[in-house]
Image (cartoon, rainbow, N blue to C red):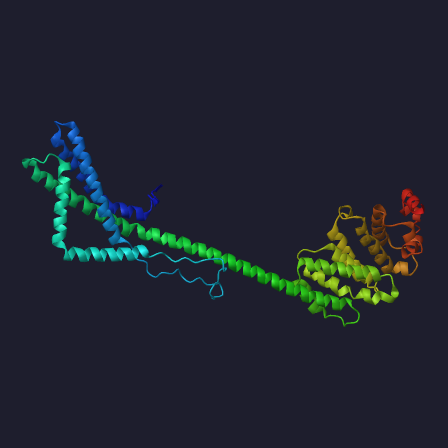
Length: 424
């Protein structure tokens, strides 16, 4: 529960309450005394109210004056006038933006308090007689408001006026002093901590931006280096880049750079795979596809596997077994071809070719065993379903020869509408 900025359940609030409670009791007793004093005019109700109002107003003025003096004497002093120097995580001084301004605690009030208290004490010690004369004149001026100034009541009125002045001034002084000593330090400390927290947050934000800028700069440098290495690898005028160096560079590249590298390597492979004179250039894409696969082992990307399988199959000295392995992995990672496009069934088409050319029965011009035959047909049927496999692609190819050896006609493999579409 909060009251005037104080948490009523906190330990500090309880300490303030225990310290000020006796003075609150004394103040309450003073009000009771004023009321009893006013009741001496009970035979004149208006007089009771007038006297009570004047005395309460004067008491309030004396109380506030005392509170002000107590506040001046009790203002806490700041130890040091700067916040702790903020440092970066590396131990160096942090610098805020030029547009940011640091603010130090304002100690003017402390200085004024120091000056006034010294002046008041000094004047009080040197001007005691003058102060007492001033108090006498003040009492004389206030006494008429405290009741009739007849010869009988004059001494009572002036005496009560002096007592009220001293009574409430001292109560106010101690209340102001205690409030300044018990409450203000925590408020000042909370304000300084809040400012420090804001500065710390700003510094963290600046450090975060600087760190992000460094990351971007480092990533840009890595991407630039990998682009140079890939260009060297794809250019036959330069010696091939060592696989370890290429693996490390591509792994450190950004996702956007990896995509750019892949599309460039894929373009060179697709433009040169069927030209015997340029197969050497196509073969230089193989290390790049291998490095791309290694860089995405945690989140494999099926086109990398597929392109590597194509390149291994179409080498001057084809690596059928390894090509079959990577094409099979590409198909497994891809899943349903209908979700990715008919072109992806070229994986099945080339996988069927790899299986045929590795089949010892085919190489001996004999029918394949039932297991191999079923696996090859399954790949071919997928390419037929997607529309990739046509009569033109079968004719005079290893697939055509394999179909003949296994007594399978093209009409059995291709539905009539596919044949009609091909002939048209």
